[in-house]
Image (cartoon, rainbow, N blue to C red; front, top):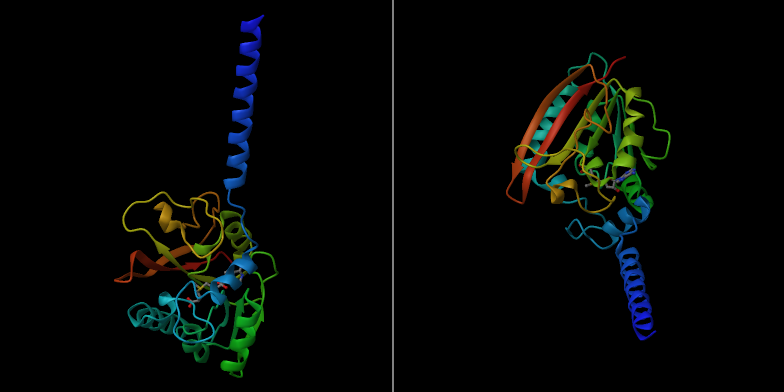
Length: 244
Ligand SMILES: C[S@@+](CC[C@H](N)C(=O)[O-])C[C@H]1O[C@@H](n2cnc3c(N)ncnc32)[C@H](O)[C@@H]1O
Protein backbone atom coordinates (compact mmCIF):
# COMPACT_ATOMS: atom_id res chain seq x y z
CA UNK A 1 0.00 0.00 0.00
CA UNK A 2 2.79 2.39 1.05
CA UNK A 3 4.93 1.50 -1.93
CA UNK A 4 1.92 1.90 -4.33
CA UNK A 5 1.36 5.35 -2.85
CA UNK A 6 5.08 6.13 -3.16
CA UNK A 7 5.18 5.09 -6.85
CA UNK A 8 1.97 6.99 -7.64
CA UNK A 9 3.51 10.12 -6.15
CA UNK A 10 6.78 9.57 -8.09
CA UNK A 11 4.78 9.21 -11.29
CA UNK A 12 2.81 12.38 -10.55
CA UNK A 13 6.03 14.28 -9.87
CA UNK A 14 7.60 12.97 -13.07
CA UNK A 15 4.57 14.00 -15.13
CA UNK A 16 4.54 17.45 -13.55
CA UNK A 17 8.27 17.92 -14.31
CA UNK A 18 7.73 16.86 -17.94
CA UNK A 19 4.78 19.27 -18.27
CA UNK A 20 6.84 22.14 -16.78
CA UNK A 21 9.72 21.35 -19.20
CA UNK A 22 7.30 21.42 -22.18
CA UNK A 23 5.85 24.73 -20.93
CA UNK A 24 9.36 26.26 -20.76
CA UNK A 25 10.18 24.92 -24.25
CA UNK A 26 6.99 26.45 -25.67
CA UNK A 27 7.76 29.80 -24.04
CA UNK A 28 11.32 29.93 -25.44
CA UNK A 29 10.39 29.16 -29.09
CA UNK A 30 11.00 32.43 -30.97
CA UNK A 31 7.86 33.85 -32.49
CA UNK A 32 8.69 35.71 -35.71
CA UNK A 33 7.44 39.27 -35.93
CA UNK A 34 5.67 40.30 -39.11
CA UNK A 35 8.48 41.35 -41.49
CA UNK A 36 7.17 44.91 -41.86
CA UNK A 37 7.27 45.46 -38.09
CA UNK A 38 10.73 43.88 -37.89
CA UNK A 39 12.15 46.12 -40.64
CA UNK A 40 10.50 49.23 -39.14
CA UNK A 41 12.08 48.41 -35.78
CA UNK A 42 15.53 47.96 -37.39
CA UNK A 43 15.38 51.50 -38.81
CA UNK A 44 13.79 53.06 -35.70
CA UNK A 45 16.41 51.51 -33.39
CA UNK A 46 19.31 52.03 -35.85
CA UNK A 47 20.13 48.32 -35.69
CA UNK A 48 22.09 48.51 -38.96
CA UNK A 49 24.06 51.49 -37.61
CA UNK A 50 23.65 55.23 -37.65
CA UNK A 51 25.11 58.01 -39.74
CA UNK A 52 22.99 60.74 -38.18
CA UNK A 53 20.30 60.45 -40.82
CA UNK A 54 16.71 59.36 -40.24
CA UNK A 55 17.21 56.09 -42.13
CA UNK A 56 20.41 54.10 -42.57
CA UNK A 57 20.57 50.77 -44.42
CA UNK A 58 23.98 49.71 -43.10
CA UNK A 59 27.63 49.60 -44.09
CA UNK A 60 26.85 47.45 -47.12
CA UNK A 61 24.94 50.40 -48.60
CA UNK A 62 27.53 53.07 -47.73
CA UNK A 63 31.05 51.64 -47.61
CA UNK A 64 32.78 52.72 -50.84
CA UNK A 65 34.83 49.48 -51.05
CA UNK A 66 31.53 47.62 -51.44
CA UNK A 67 29.48 50.25 -53.21
CA UNK A 68 31.85 51.57 -55.94
CA UNK A 69 32.63 48.24 -57.66
CA UNK A 70 28.91 47.41 -57.53
CA UNK A 71 27.91 50.70 -59.17
CA UNK A 72 30.62 50.31 -61.84
CA UNK A 73 29.51 46.79 -62.65
CA UNK A 74 25.82 47.74 -62.83
CA UNK A 75 26.49 50.83 -64.93
CA UNK A 76 28.31 48.73 -67.53
CA UNK A 77 25.40 46.26 -67.55
CA UNK A 78 22.67 48.91 -67.76
CA UNK A 79 24.46 50.84 -70.53
CA UNK A 80 24.85 47.66 -72.62
CA UNK A 81 21.16 47.88 -73.67
CA UNK A 82 20.21 49.67 -76.91
CA UNK A 83 17.18 51.07 -75.11
CA UNK A 84 17.71 51.79 -71.37
CA UNK A 85 15.86 49.15 -69.31
CA UNK A 86 13.04 49.51 -66.80
CA UNK A 87 14.52 48.57 -63.42
CA UNK A 88 12.68 47.39 -60.30
CA UNK A 89 14.76 47.78 -57.14
CA UNK A 90 13.22 45.30 -54.68
CA UNK A 91 14.15 46.43 -51.15
CA UNK A 92 15.74 49.76 -52.06
CA UNK A 93 16.55 50.77 -48.44
CA UNK A 94 17.92 54.28 -47.88
CA UNK A 95 18.63 54.50 -51.64
CA UNK A 96 22.29 55.40 -51.22
CA UNK A 97 23.06 52.72 -53.84
CA UNK A 98 20.04 53.04 -56.15
CA UNK A 99 20.42 56.83 -56.51
CA UNK A 100 23.56 56.32 -58.64
CA UNK A 101 21.80 54.00 -61.10
CA UNK A 102 18.64 55.97 -61.93
CA UNK A 103 20.15 57.96 -64.82
CA UNK A 104 21.05 54.76 -66.71
CA UNK A 105 17.45 53.55 -66.82
CA UNK A 106 14.27 54.31 -68.74
CA UNK A 107 12.26 54.04 -65.52
CA UNK A 108 13.43 53.16 -61.99
CA UNK A 109 10.83 51.69 -59.63
CA UNK A 110 12.17 51.54 -56.08
CA UNK A 111 10.28 49.46 -53.52
CA UNK A 112 10.60 48.98 -49.79
CA UNK A 113 8.42 47.57 -47.01
CA UNK A 114 9.03 50.46 -44.57
CA UNK A 115 6.34 53.14 -45.06
CA UNK A 116 8.21 56.07 -43.44
CA UNK A 117 11.40 55.24 -45.34
CA UNK A 118 9.53 55.38 -48.65
CA UNK A 119 7.96 58.71 -47.65
CA UNK A 120 11.45 60.01 -46.71
CA UNK A 121 12.97 58.80 -49.99
CA UNK A 122 10.16 60.38 -52.02
CA UNK A 123 11.06 63.79 -50.58
CA UNK A 124 14.84 63.32 -50.80
CA UNK A 125 15.30 61.79 -54.26
CA UNK A 126 13.49 63.30 -57.21
CA UNK A 127 13.91 62.36 -60.83
CA UNK A 128 11.60 62.26 -63.80
CA UNK A 129 11.97 58.50 -64.31
CA UNK A 130 12.12 57.62 -60.58
CA UNK A 131 9.20 56.36 -58.48
CA UNK A 132 8.97 54.90 -54.97
CA UNK A 133 6.39 52.44 -53.69
CA UNK A 134 5.80 50.92 -50.28
CA UNK A 135 5.21 47.21 -50.88
CA UNK A 136 6.02 43.84 -49.37
CA UNK A 137 7.91 42.02 -52.12
CA UNK A 138 6.90 38.64 -50.67
CA UNK A 139 3.18 39.43 -50.48
CA UNK A 140 2.41 42.03 -53.15
CA UNK A 141 2.24 41.82 -56.95
CA UNK A 142 5.52 43.21 -58.25
CA UNK A 143 5.66 45.93 -60.92
CA UNK A 144 6.67 44.95 -64.45
CA UNK A 145 10.21 45.65 -65.61
CA UNK A 146 13.20 44.34 -67.56
CA UNK A 147 15.65 44.04 -64.67
CA UNK A 148 15.03 43.27 -60.99
CA UNK A 149 17.75 44.38 -58.58
CA UNK A 150 17.68 42.68 -55.16
CA UNK A 151 20.64 43.82 -53.12
CA UNK A 152 21.17 42.43 -49.62
CA UNK A 153 17.45 41.96 -49.03
CA UNK A 154 16.67 38.23 -49.34
CA UNK A 155 19.54 37.44 -46.94
CA UNK A 156 17.30 38.89 -44.18
CA UNK A 157 14.17 36.91 -45.09
CA UNK A 158 12.88 33.47 -44.09
CA UNK A 159 12.85 30.69 -46.71
CA UNK A 160 9.04 30.97 -46.99
CA UNK A 161 9.32 34.65 -47.93
CA UNK A 162 12.30 34.08 -50.25
CA UNK A 163 10.28 31.40 -52.05
CA UNK A 164 7.31 33.77 -52.43
CA UNK A 165 9.66 36.33 -54.07
CA UNK A 166 11.40 33.73 -56.26
CA UNK A 167 8.04 32.63 -57.70
CA UNK A 168 7.57 36.17 -59.07
CA UNK A 169 11.07 36.62 -60.50
CA UNK A 170 10.30 34.74 -63.77
CA UNK A 171 8.49 37.94 -64.88
CA UNK A 172 11.83 39.75 -65.38
CA UNK A 173 14.41 39.24 -68.14
CA UNK A 174 17.32 39.75 -65.76
CA UNK A 175 17.80 39.46 -62.01
CA UNK A 176 20.79 41.03 -60.29
CA UNK A 177 21.03 39.46 -56.86
CA UNK A 178 23.48 40.48 -54.13
CA UNK A 179 23.85 38.30 -51.05
CA UNK A 180 26.12 38.12 -48.02
CA UNK A 181 27.62 34.60 -48.09
CA UNK A 182 30.11 32.65 -45.99
CA UNK A 183 33.56 32.17 -47.51
CA UNK A 184 34.35 28.69 -48.88
CA UNK A 185 31.94 25.75 -48.86
CA UNK A 186 28.69 26.08 -46.95
CA UNK A 187 25.30 24.46 -46.59
CA UNK A 188 22.95 26.72 -48.53
CA UNK A 189 19.47 27.94 -47.64
CA UNK A 190 19.30 27.19 -43.91
CA UNK A 191 16.08 28.55 -42.39
CA UNK A 192 16.10 31.85 -40.49
CA UNK A 193 13.48 34.14 -38.99
CA UNK A 194 13.10 37.34 -41.03
CA UNK A 195 14.88 40.29 -39.42
CA UNK A 196 18.14 42.08 -38.81
CA UNK A 197 20.40 39.03 -39.06
CA UNK A 198 21.41 36.79 -41.97
CA UNK A 199 22.12 33.10 -42.56
CA UNK A 200 25.81 33.83 -41.96
CA UNK A 201 25.34 33.23 -38.22
CA UNK A 202 24.41 29.65 -39.20
CA UNK A 203 27.39 29.40 -41.60
CA UNK A 204 24.86 29.46 -44.46
CA UNK A 205 23.76 31.72 -47.29
CA UNK A 206 21.23 31.77 -50.10
CA UNK A 207 21.60 29.90 -53.38
CA UNK A 208 18.35 30.39 -55.29
CA UNK A 209 19.20 27.63 -57.79
CA UNK A 210 19.09 24.98 -55.04
CA UNK A 211 16.13 23.53 -53.07
CA UNK A 212 13.76 24.68 -51.73
CA UNK A 213 13.82 27.53 -54.31
CA UNK A 214 14.94 25.80 -57.53
CA UNK A 215 14.99 29.00 -59.59
CA UNK A 216 15.28 28.10 -63.29
CA UNK A 217 17.60 30.43 -65.19
CA UNK A 218 19.02 30.58 -68.71
CA UNK A 219 22.44 31.83 -67.67
CA UNK A 220 24.30 32.69 -64.47
CA UNK A 221 27.22 35.16 -64.36
CA UNK A 222 28.98 36.16 -61.17
CA UNK A 223 29.66 39.89 -61.41
CA UNK A 224 31.36 40.51 -58.06
CA UNK A 225 32.65 38.82 -54.94
CA UNK A 226 33.82 41.38 -52.40
CA UNK A 227 35.37 40.95 -48.97
CA UNK A 228 34.98 43.63 -46.33
CA UNK A 229 37.10 44.44 -43.30
CA UNK A 230 33.86 45.25 -41.50
CA UNK A 231 32.50 41.71 -41.39
CA UNK A 232 33.30 38.10 -42.28
CA UNK A 233 32.15 36.48 -45.50
CA UNK A 234 31.73 37.83 -49.01
CA UNK A 235 29.25 40.14 -50.69
CA UNK A 236 28.46 38.30 -53.92
CA UNK A 237 26.56 39.74 -56.88
CA UNK A 238 25.15 37.43 -59.54
CA UNK A 239 23.44 38.28 -62.81
CA UNK A 240 20.78 35.78 -63.84
CA UNK A 241 19.40 35.84 -67.35
CA UNK A 242 15.91 34.37 -67.21
CA UNK A 243 14.07 32.22 -69.76
CA UNK A 244 11.78 34.48 -71.77
C1 LIG B 1 20.03 45.80 -45.85
S1 LIG B 1 18.83 46.79 -46.62
C2 LIG B 1 19.49 46.92 -48.29
C3 LIG B 1 19.01 48.15 -48.99
C4 LIG B 1 19.49 48.34 -50.43
N1 LIG B 1 19.07 47.25 -51.28
C5 LIG B 1 20.99 48.50 -50.49
O1 LIG B 1 21.69 47.59 -50.96
O2 LIG B 1 21.46 49.56 -50.09
C6 LIG B 1 17.45 45.69 -46.85
C7 LIG B 1 16.15 46.44 -47.21
O3 LIG B 1 15.17 45.49 -47.62
C8 LIG B 1 13.92 45.93 -47.14
N2 LIG B 1 12.99 44.78 -47.09
C9 LIG B 1 13.10 43.69 -46.29
N3 LIG B 1 12.06 42.85 -46.50
C10 LIG B 1 11.29 43.42 -47.46
C11 LIG B 1 10.08 43.03 -48.10
N4 LIG B 1 9.46 41.90 -47.77
N5 LIG B 1 9.57 43.85 -49.04
C12 LIG B 1 10.18 45.02 -49.38
N6 LIG B 1 11.34 45.43 -48.79
C13 LIG B 1 11.89 44.64 -47.84
C14 LIG B 1 14.24 46.51 -45.78
O4 LIG B 1 13.23 47.36 -45.31
C15 LIG B 1 15.55 47.22 -46.07
O5 LIG B 1 15.34 48.55 -46.43
